[in-house]
Length: 283
Image 1: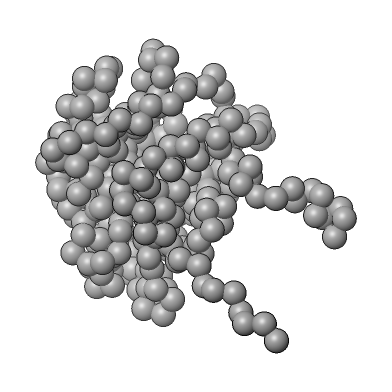
Image 2 (image 1 turned 120 degrees about the vertical axis):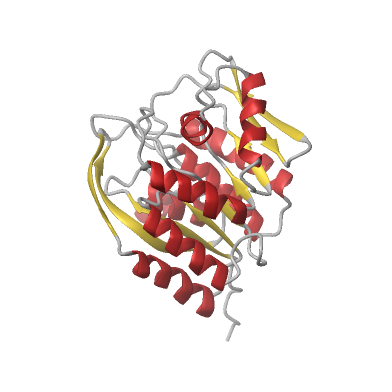
């Protein structure tokens, strides 16, 4: 008899479900799998969503969100965790309390990536002012890393980033809310020929520059990037190395994005997997 395989690092995503499978919990889990970690979930909301957008959602009771976090952390263990769509201030408060109790975040020993999903792909707000306040006051100080895009930067800081200089200003403003690291993504600086993601630890900047691809299908790109960073941290990489690896991962996943429905298709980490078509056909 052979011994069972070793248990891979365990990662937790605290986020909403995307019924279209392009972003949210679904994007997080497929990225975790492609990165070789075991993914677990604490679902905050169920969205009514397809490739054209979100037409509705139903939130999960805050106590149920907190219970999902605690039940997996106390039994299975969590080597790194991330957030996505958190829906309401009450859910954010419950998440902060649960993470504190199971030592997820800066006061504990589990890296915590806060992806402050607060704007749609069209730049429209997804969170109320009270929820934004809760993000800034409760989760940012717990975060090992926050990963806003430029629309989310505007909602969180009031800075409308139009240049790389303003991208640095935004990173400094976000650092004032207390996270250990800030990653200001530059994907929405559409006039730049390259895509700069700027990492900041409160004193030093690290630049990650990549090509800007002329692609339509980018749904779930922020979730995929944050999930890759979370996976790398769970495997023991330092923050700079984790972001560098995730930058390369998301660039390839954008290139592998595919059309879906009548709207925007998802970025895809399928390039990380063996040829599944061959396996299914040949057994």
